Every structure is written in structure tokens, then in C-alpha cells.
Length: 117
Image (cartoon, rainbow, N blue to C red; front, side, top):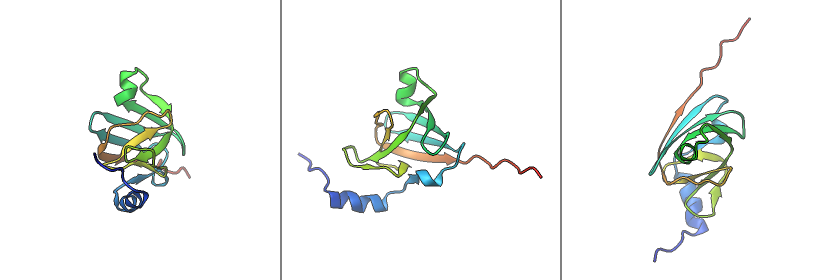
């Protein structure tokens, strides 16, 4: 049997993981997340809400679905709430749907609209 990771191990791993933090995203940014089993696309609608397509949402015929992101887990109940995605972790949506382990993340930035003078 494999022992569950300790809080110390999780804390150390959290500081090393390559991650996309919620605070680094802007309205309209797209995030493409490839997991072990699916591909998800998320478009940031505001600080707490994303339009999500792919994976479970496609299978339930809900895409695109407006939902929050709780954060990422190591597969258990410890959650890192300030991030959207990190390779090796599982993404948990606001409706409690959890993805398989993330393999790849890509952020597509929305260009700022030109200012009108």
C-alpha cells in the first residue's frame, strides 16, 4: 500500500510545481488543459467564473458551462485554491467535478483592446 503524502510533503511540492495562478489571468484569457483522459478549454469571464468546455462538460452536453474553479488537488482533499492548473495535479471545478491528472497547460492571452482617444 502506498502511504498518503504528508502535509509537509504537499507543502514542499506546492512550492515547486509549475502553476497557472488565478491572479495571473485576465478577463477573456483562454486556458487549454490536457489531462490524462480529456481536454478542457476555459475562458475567464470574471475573477470567479469561467466558460468551460470539454471533458465531463461535453459528455454531459453542458458545454460551454459557466462554473468556478475551486483549485487543484494532489488527488485527495488537500486543495491549492489560488491556482487554475498545474501539471501533475487534478483540477477541481466549482460543481465538484474533478479531472484526471493534468499533463499540459497552455494559456492564450486576450490582446488588450486598443484605447480610444
